[in-house]
Length: 406
Image 1: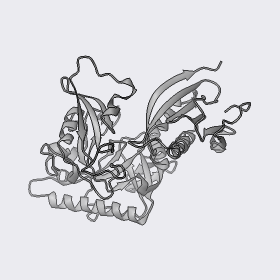
Image 2: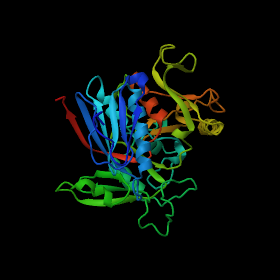
Image 3: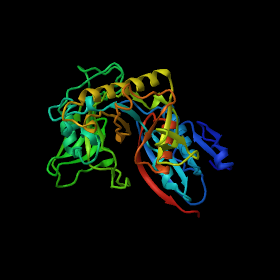
């Protein structure tokens, strides 16, 4: 909001935007429905408009305001001048200063940043629709979670769609009051739109069959289209980014997917103080940025003794399973078992536990770390996403424009 403007009737709140990073930049945050006024950040800027979704329920003002607060923190941590405000009943408009590295802000601002930890082998689903923990063709074996061994997304959706619903006591997939017997109007699993002729996923996952066609979407004219429903309790995760022999990422979003029993043991809420660090192989752990040399990683602690206990139990079970799997004729590498860390539906890392070094799992008293395939920038970005948590609503980018200073 410019200084000469008056607040709209539902009120604006002017708040400092991390002055330590951005000096005297102020934000104008729409608290109520005040129309679609554009952000007042001056100079060359990039304008992003997001539409919010909250499942079957209407998008609430509280969830919009919570999302705006998280988005501000993410962009502020990158030191990018910006202005973020509600611009309609279900829209958020973001203005980023078009200087320096605005692409980093674009990448961070609307991400959901949902982190989950899974025990890998017991939860990867095979062709029969059940976990196949000893089938390396399903789990990846020593190359667990690799892009070379996953399924094309189309085939992964078909495998997932065969599974019956699994409802757990802590399941958040269902809306309040939704039951197996009565699912009309409820958010219940997810939907995909498939082109069976070309074996492609056209859209999804989405919360309803209707939402697959939102924003006037029209499938290609030559497509043979069908909507497919995946029940709660099953999730698709994208394989790890594809790397070359030197560890450089050559495909960040491969068409390679794994079907999982959706039973994470920890989430992003269970970790705290994530920071970009440097792995130190001599110490077997990690150093914070500036304390030494080594490959970049993300160091984190646990938000409670419960989270620490669960992580230690997870790694202990993985280690014990590896010990049991080393039968005559099976190498230690083939026997080692894994857990997986999934961020926003993509595998970040699927580390094995060396049961000869850690026969009782990993002591998490001093926290742990996520390593493998990071640059300093990508490790710092991941730490930022984890630090400020998941957005309370899903955001769809519906408009992007560049405005030059006039």
